[in-house]
Length: 69
Image: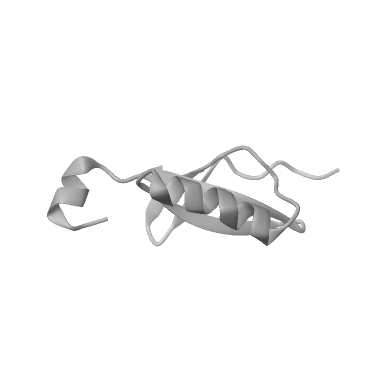
């Protein structure tokens, strides 16, 4: 039985949340990732059991103004 991906993962010391969708191809996941990026999210792609996942985190206005992440 396949286990569900983690709802939250840490990348580069930052917590990201999974969007809850398993994508069949990296291309599909990349297209969704691009949409999140345009909306001001930081994103990471991950692969588990041959499925592609998109993790995201909102960049706060304070971080954006300071030029940080």
